[in-house]
Length: 433
Ligand code: ASP
Image (cartoon, rainbow, N blue to C red; front, side, top):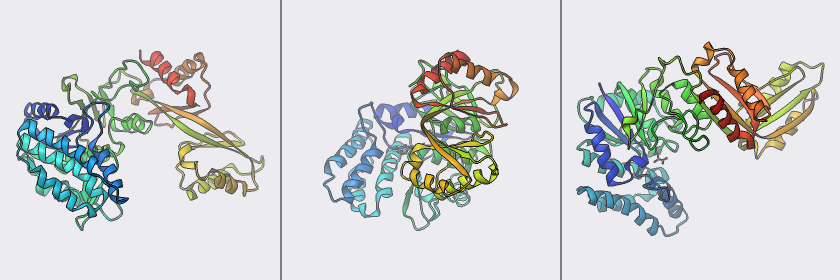
């Protein structure tokens, strides 16, 4: 058994956190590969090192003095080093960083993970391996997975204990390249795939995925098991425990991913895999997101709907606007998009749609929220959508649009932005509690 254990920023925020990580890795010999984020917030008012480094780079770029920011960053690392009696020469490391600022934003920001990994490697007695020597980006900004897996397999044999900083890799010329925010989750899953791990454990500040967001529902239940696909649906709709792309490297080889709370791993967390044994829970999770718009298009009676839909989709494609859903009726259809994606070009889009003489009318419906009720077991159970609509009806929530495909993994309803929390609470009350 070989386990990759990734620790998020809040799990490495203090020397006490480092001690807890030591307990965790020492309690299971299989945890031979550790990935770390940069030092995160030690309390809600604190700042993440990554945010500070982005801010510091803005100062560098506009030639504003950055000494204050750098000293906040330094003090975080020095405090942990001193409290744990570590030897790492941080002065030398920071001098080196300052001397290399010309290497750019990705270089500077990546130093958050790099330094955290150096300290943690020394503290745990693991060998530090730089992510720049493992994860190869192509010049189009995408990871070259084939090359990366080969390098990982040749550098990490599954016997020695290694520590790798998350969040970055390098182009073939050695320049550092960052993943998108939260990308250490992706580093962990690439490593898990590269070493063919039996499990990828992702330690964070929450005990796993909740059936609904604890910011909306009081004390929601924890999801014990969930499939990769369900997870993607929920993450897409705003349930943000792990980076949306983190499942890709491990999904097709079915390496299970477990979300665990660093400070209470005994809670067991959420297990994500391609098949789940539980057939009892019909609904796995409920998530929702505000800020969608529906472009409602009415066609002339005699015209061919297929042509008009394809015309309208091309207009959106030309403006680079992704489409969420296309509910249709005989003479009209709506195209649901994220408001943000059309905020600068809606008038151009409408003008271009109007160029088609077969389009009779165009209306924009704003401020729509989408709620996704996700569950792999819904496919076995008739009547779930009826229950959802009756719950929404009883709570006086008007349904503006409905979408479900035949995989029946989720039912999506569009409602007013202002009804979102009420709807999620009502569906949770009615279907989960
Ligand atoms: N430190 C980076 C961030 O804050 C990456 C990560 O934590 O995964 O986005």
